[in-house]
Length: 255
Length: 255
Image (cartoon, rainbow over all chains, first blue to last red):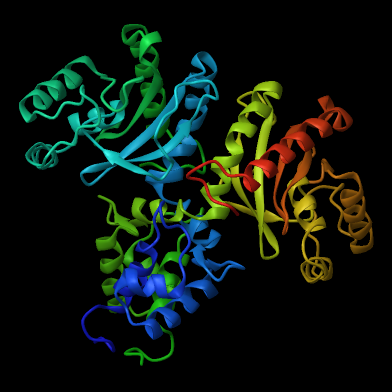
């Protein structure tokens, strides 16, 4: 069925999109060819089609970047902007009360993806980028998402090496397993200097009847933080978003 | 070179993505076939490839939705989340000062696309959706983007019928032309009840050396609004974002 042997055309088109990353958001044709291991004429032809549709844009510098049209279509992802639209008013409330970093994340395979972030201008600096990925075993949102992930996901994470970010990152599978049980019992997670030595996060689940679909957190300077005081605030926020997801206002979508 | 005559595989893959819209964010295989006018077996095969990569997700209801993986890639669009990351702190400042709706938009062809919106909980309701499109000739951000668009874009908009949203929408090309000149002269645009009869927006340009790349606005209840008081606030916000785009902090991208 395929004109070009080996890889399907669809997979080639998707490989072209895959070549872009936060570290390489702008690529030339030959960089695209190198990264996708596709012949230059193929890259040339497919890229032209992607530009015509608007999935890629060509800059004055001759480099290609992800195009706004792709972003428009992607804004329809229920787990992306769909979730974000429902959660944002609640995140803004949390921000106004605390002026700290507020984060929203979902699990994708064995990692988390940050869907939204409100960064306090004077709050502790955080590493996260909207659309960016992070390991599940270190951050507050990650611990919540992992604690409520299917058993096979948990086992895969526990079986793989657990990267150490600070001396307080939990890298022992047995300890992580107990920590996840604590998260389920408490209804929230605390990551105390497990990602950077200056930050502490408190995270709570966002759930629909099918299970936990996202997590929301506050990230604060660890030396000014009182997790016990923050937890009720974050848990309440998680519950408000959960309710909003189950009873969506017109125009928004169920997860 | 093509196994399937007529449309290229790339165009078929993109047509599948195009089938999704705010009104139809979840589609069955047969709905996809109807909307793309592709044979069901083709839709079946391509959709499976898109699901495997994560561009689409299949729900428990058997419907397909835009997948998180596509949203992750799309988050690299400089004119989407790239711009948004730079502008958001400024938008948050505007929101904290006013508690009104703050909007950010770019031009795509003959329309605008809303990149970000902070919606005041008690502010006047607005029609906009992040990732959604709107005409250029009615909103404040649209008037700014149109006023600074290339001459051929302006002529195309002026030559087409100008949709009337309220009795105050400018639908006469000559009047719109004069309005655009005023916007360029004043450095900001006011849309007074030109989209809905309860709202007024004040918008200012965001520019890099190559030209105006985006617009930022406040949308307020028209009966409480004083455009003359709001304009300096919005113009200052536009200038701060412009400067930030030209001197990007590490990790962010130039437009």
